[in-house]
Image 1 (cartoon, rainbow, N blue to C red):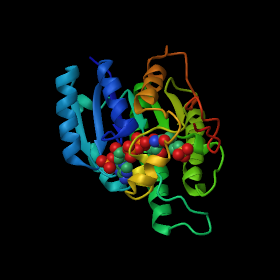
Image 2: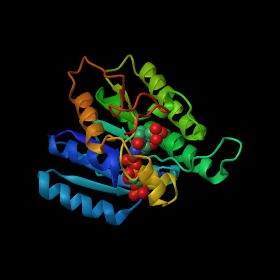
Image 3: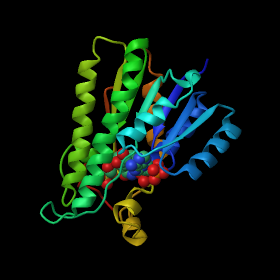
Image 4: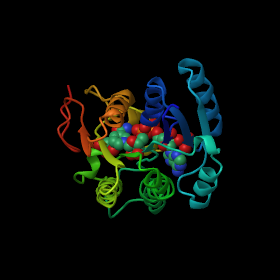
Length: 252
Ligand code: NDP
Ligand code: 8X3
């Protein structure tokens, strides 16, 4: 039987690219996000293009009960998840730490940290039982060091790094692998969300530099998933060629 990958935040950007990449490699994919309509359209498109089975699951990763209900609703034939891609996440706002918006902060922490933990807590025990599985967390270069006006988002991605490292330690006695992918600038809907729909401000983020694409990150995720069983790609920092760190970008 084909392997199964569950991808959170599959309706856009990096998650959508991972869904396509894994489906293209023959994985059955469970695609999840909050927008049911987009999930349904994507499921049809992936089935048609790649001839693989697709299971759409609509839920908000911030809602622990909804996460549990959604995972409990997975049919028996789909339960043996081989790869969990914890990708759902966002940045909201770009403000000094002493001036940020409380709701933006709570949404980032609830999504990027608590949502990832809920998924991990509910999916990984099955992997441990089956002695098989791989968790790929989408961290960020932002988790390596703070940059101006981004401290809370950076802190959530630093948390993703530490949670990935901790999980890898706690799973070291099993064959289950943990990967933390840390992209730099990737042109997706990320900046539109960060700037609350200010598309002009969002497009400035990618001015004068060729940013990464969701596909660039999905390629690395698939490489990590397909590495031989004795190889654990623990962490990968993926930057655009003219980006050197979270705060150093050369623009033409
Ligand atoms: P997008 O905005 O394009 O995609 C975000 C995805 O997350 C969407 O599918 C969205 O779906 C989903 N999502 C957001 N909130 C929730 C929620 N509460 N519950 C369930 N799903 C949710 O951004 P990216 O593809 O760029 O971001 C994906 C990940 O990559 C994030 O974790 C981000 O931090 C990380 N990242 C992004 C970088 C970039 O430069 N773009 C660089 C480094 C890391 P829906 O709205 O349908 O729920
Ligand atoms: C997203 C990349 O540099 O915009 O995690 O924070 S960055």
